[in-house]
Image (cartoon, rainbow, N blue to C red; front, side, top):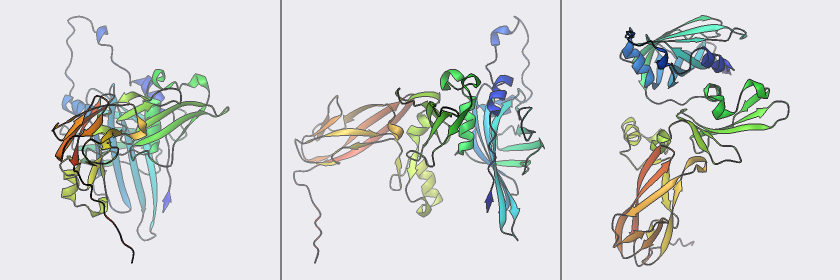
Length: 365
C-alpha cells in the first residue's frame, strides 16, 4: 500500500490574520440592533465540537475520516484521512489534509490555502443543526476528493502529527515564541508518544540548529504545554482535564464493546487504568507501624499537587507530606486528589494492613 502524506504548512498563520481573531464587541455603536445569526444552532454546535465523522457510503478502498476540534475565536482545526484505491490491484493511496477553518455566523466553515501555495484549493464545511453530519465540498487541487456527507461517529479524536503542526502555528506568538522574524525553522516530531498521550515537539532553526522552543501536545489536541529546558512546563492552550479523565485500555483486542464503553465512562476497573494515577511506593500491603510515600504518576512529569486522606484512620494515616503510616490490621482506602493546571483527578487506593506478609515461593524441582 502506498502512503502519501501531504502536510499543509504555514496556512494557519494566514487564517489567523484573516479572521481567527477575537471580535471587538466595543466597536458596536450604541442602540444598534444586532442581527441573530441565520443558523445560530450550528454555530453553537461548532463551539463544542470535538468529534470524529466518517464519509457516508465509504468502502474498504474508498473512504474518508474527518476529525474536527473547535479551537477559539470562530476557528476549528480539521483533519481528513482520505483513502482511494483499487480492490482488484490491492493498491491504495492515503492522504492527510489538515488545516484551520474560519466559521461564519451562519455556521459555515471555510478554508483557503494561501495565495502562493503550490496546490491551491478551498474547502467548505456545512454542519447540520443537530450536529450529526457535515457536508463537505472542495474546489481546486486535491489528489483525493474529500467531498461528501460525513456522519458523526463519536466524541473521540486522535490527530496525526500533521495537525500538531497546525495547532502550533495557530497559537499566538507570545505563547510559542515562533514568528517569521526569527528565520526559517522546522517543527520536529518524535516517533512515539509519551505515556500514550503527549507528542514531544521541538521548533529548530534551520541554519543554526538552535532549539527555539519545546512543547508537549496532547494527542487529542486538548492541551499544549510549553516545555523548554530552562522552565517548568506550563500550559499555553486548552485544558488538562481530558488528560486527568483519560483511561488506558489494557489488551483492547480482548475487550467487548460494552466493556470498552464502561471503561471510558470510568465504571470498569479490571481492563483499564487512569492515565494520571497514584501509587503507594512500597505497595498496598503494609504491616503495622511501617510507612510508605504516595507517588503521583503523570505524563511527562508535569508539575502537580497531591492531597490525600485515609477513609479509616484506625487502619492507616496520611500526613501532610503524603506519607502513609499503617496503624493496625484491616482494610481501607486512601482518597487522593491530583491537580495539574485546571485539571483534577480523584483516585481511591486500597490499602491492606496485616501483621504477616504472605510471600509466594516457587520451588524448582
